[in-house]
Image (cartoon, rainbow, N blue to C red):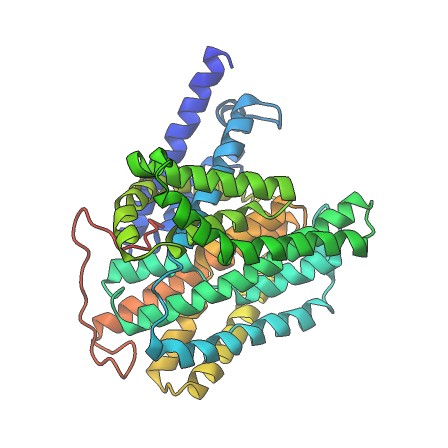
Amino acid sequence: MSTESLGSLALALLLLVAGANLLGLLAVRLRQPRVVGEILAGVVLGPSLLGLLAPQVAAQIFGDGDKDPATVVLGFLYHLGLLLLMFISGTSARNVLSRENRRPTAWLLGLGTVLPFCFALGVASILPLGAFMGEARSEAAVILVIAIAAAVTSIPVITKIFYDLGILHTRFASLMLGVAVLEDIVLWGFLALATAIASATVAAGGQAVAGTVAVHVGINIAFVVLGMTVLPRLLRRMSRARWNVVARQSPIAWIIAVFLAYVSVAAALDVTLAFAAFLAGFAIVGGVDGTETQRLRAPLDAIAHVSGAVFIPIYFAIVGYRLDFTQGFSPLMLVAFLVGSTLVVVVSIGVAARLAGFRGLDIVNLALTHNARGGPGIVLASVAFDAGIISAPFFTTLVLTAVLTSQACGFWLDFVLRRGWPLLATEGPVEQRPPVLGSAPAPVHPT
């Protein structure tokens, strides 16, 4: 890279990091999820505004082609931010399932997730899928993505909303996080299936090959099973081994090494990288005991804080940068998907919550929180778009749906708490515990 290229890249990173953090803080001040401001920063810097007003300036700063050095580096940072987001989300998949929540979790997961997924599968099969399909031209993959998008719930965003509102210690928070963790594990498995189908379709020149898909699915299933059973125990033994001086002397380096190893192996096996990063985070905390967890908490917090201040905001800003409202936006598609999927989720969670023994305001709180698509909804859109499964208008629809549903969740819970209403009737009035400056909960994500 020339000095001029390095200077342009440094300026691009400055604008992305500073813009995402400043607008993220502004969003928090306005009682909105921070991810809203981070995405808005990308929209301002992207083709919807800066690229429209000063296209030559935008091209010089952010690159104007696939082989442009700035484009290549920003593309790498985009994927790194995505992988770190999923890794940190995976580290939250522990200690969120208490005994009192097992029955309601089963109902909320069994009906609240399955019904929207199955309903979307049925509806998607009769839609004009041409408007939703990307370059892979795979109807089966598009149908799966639509179903996942209708059912997904955000672990990182609702965790941060709970943290900011001082309710992370409540039973309501542990219940919702437990459901979200189990749900996302299942739905990421379906996304791996969708990407496998798309890959097989592209390889076969537009005709999906059953044998190729079966191999992809088998490899993904094996990776998931090993990643949730054998590998966490293996990592625990490796981290305690006397020969492992890296784990003892530099826990951050050990954690990053595990993260990169998962991603590298997944890439070699053609497993969805974002899902592999999630499993890496799960394995880091899932294979250790209480003492080991305390030893790893500071390194994990350090990684989360740096990622949350730099790499993850860059990811969300680039997501916003890729939103081109001048070309890839369909208001009708957005309204139809947002309203339709929200109604299905709210009704499904309402039925599940009632069968689990909840009533009244409890059901409303659970339904609106479960409907927050947040980070996973955006990750789903990014992975599906990069794999050529979905079109640009549907990518924009999924990202905006994730943002709007997360805004609705944060606004409603803040309203309930300000009115002094309980989140769950069995808990009574909530004692909010504001975060202490300089501290962070175990499952942290700054967006």
